[in-house]
Amino acid sequence: MNILELAFKRHKNWIDIVVSFGCNRDTAEDIVQEMYIRIDRLVKSGTNIYYKDDINYYYIYLTLKTMFLDLRKKESRIYISSIDEVQNNLSYDQVEIDYDKHYKKFVEAFNELYWYDQKVFEIIDNGTSVRELSRRTKISYASLYNTYRKVLKHLKSKI
Image (cartoon, rainbow, N blue to C red; front, side, top):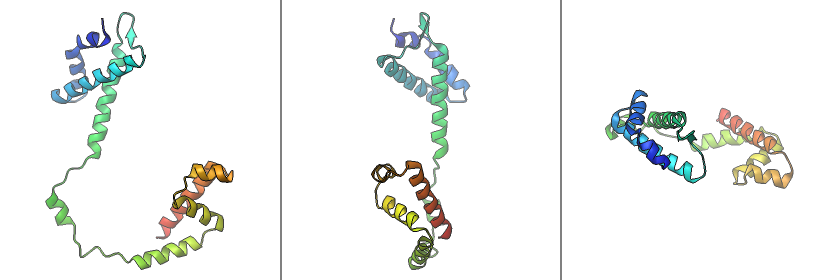
């Protein structure tokens, strides 16, 4: 018997498990359907999720729990606001940025740095990856990365 057929025999149980996590039935149904797709991919890639002659319940439980938690994390990052809220909170009169002042602060802060830090920052900021710069100069990746992060932190604190 196919692994999906074995899993589908307990379809109602899987839905009940997801509902017990605090999910509504419609969303639970979607999560269980996604679980079937995930299991199918795993089996086709050669993963064995059998336990003796039956399906591994614990593996299915963990898969469902993980999928439910991933969904909750995604939902928590989404904030829905109406266009009226945004327009009421946004005042174009208050948004004036003095770019010249900020640029001068940037240049002053940048000139405070050691020449090495300036060069590393310039090269990486111009598009060369830290890994590529490390290969070319034979300077460790960690050293270059830490230098770049230190310069960024310094510039942000001064501006």
